[in-house]
View 1 (cartoon, helix red, strand yellow):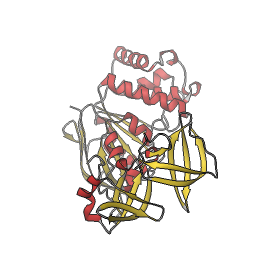
View 2 (cartoon, one colour):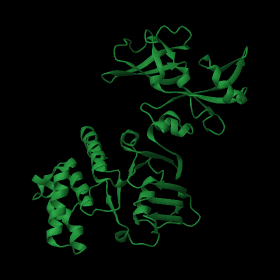
View 3 (cartoon, helix red, strand yellow):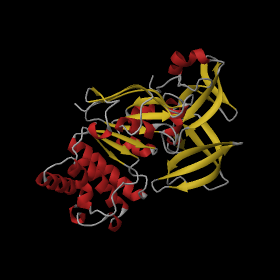
View 4 (cartoon, helix red, strand yellow):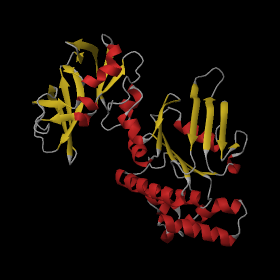
Length: 373
């Protein structure tokens, strides 16, 4: 069982300094693909390096396959790490790069050859075994780096932003290849990225981090549909969720949200869990795709609407991003590409309010954490 468990793991770089990682509790199950995601400086790479043994732990314990590894050297942890910059030896061929770690561990030549060629076949780099890294593209070099990890047959694979140096097309291709690799190897993988698209498309579970703290640990769709707080709601999603500061009111018995830009009725079922916030400041969050353009509201005349000025139009092919403004408040809507408008025009959009979110303005925590209540 290649389970990885972090109990109260913290990292402080200097005496009296701030915690780069703060009391992180995480259990990565055997064969799970777990992604640590967050902005630069959130502690995700430091966490990965502590698992690998490249950083010492200030507090807590890390266990791999049931064994506490706090004082175990990196080479004895049964892990393999793939780095952002590939970390290939330029004077060695692809074959030699992939074989190097096995040679250090005194594997037989026949075993080394078998493992290297098997990994090369899996990754489609058999034809490049005699080349040196400078003769390879970025995507090919990353495959070599992954292949060097595969030949080790470790208990756990660790990936530290491995796709960030690749172009957009190659990132998409390599995402799919790493996913297929995970399925084929049935391995435990922990993957670090700042790209929430990578996290959403690759992970069995996501760990969303900010300032060294895990703000939410859950399956990708749960993180997207039921964010724990304003940070998670704004970080996961492209474009990010729109937020409006306002107050919750009771208007003739109907729960309503009022801000400077609009006043809208809320679903009657929301009173059960949001009623105690009447008269209090809240944040109304709605994703860009939950704005509905005229003609696509299925004749729902009761759908709340908002009129806004178009500031920027970004055609994306099948859909269009509209950057809008009401007074000085800006927000984004995703609409079908056949919605015709132009910069400077006014557009009216409906709001699919049952899919929106409410957050406590003071704590920034989700009030609902679910719009399906």
